[in-house]
Length: 132
Image 1 (tube, rainbow, N blue to C red):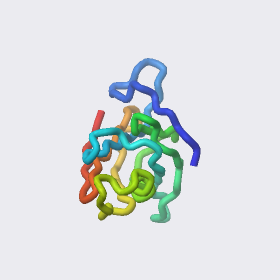
Image 2 (image 1 turned 135 degrees about the horizontal axis):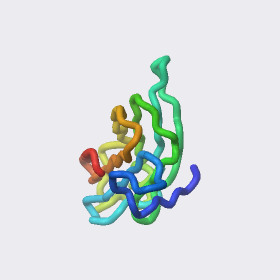
Image 3 (image 1 turned 180 degrees about the vertical axis):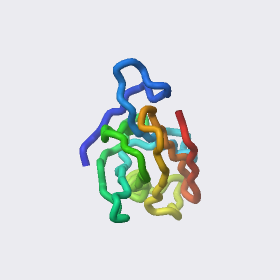
Image 4 (image 1 turned 60 degrees about the horizontal axis):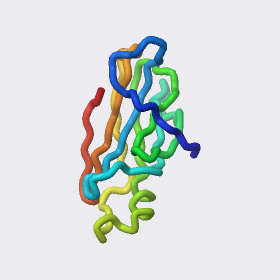
């Protein structure tokens, strides 16, 4: 996987000259810090019903990734390889993580805006929301 340093401006609406994109951000709620160096992959559901991997990156030191794929209408998912992160953290808070590699699926209809899909992470749970 290649490293990717996300831009600091991840807010909608689009700034002049910026392209619509998908971004993510992982916050380790147990430690209260961004989760850096987490492998993250973006997939698109093709017409045959199979998932095509579009991009693979590691989160930056602020726990962020901005994907560069050109948006098209359809279903996407982001896979977060948090097991590797927890191994590198030497078992956050001294416990094993329950979830291995969560995936968040979502649908894009408007290809003219930015989409931010954050992951709030702890050893025994995770949550997300549609960010801006």
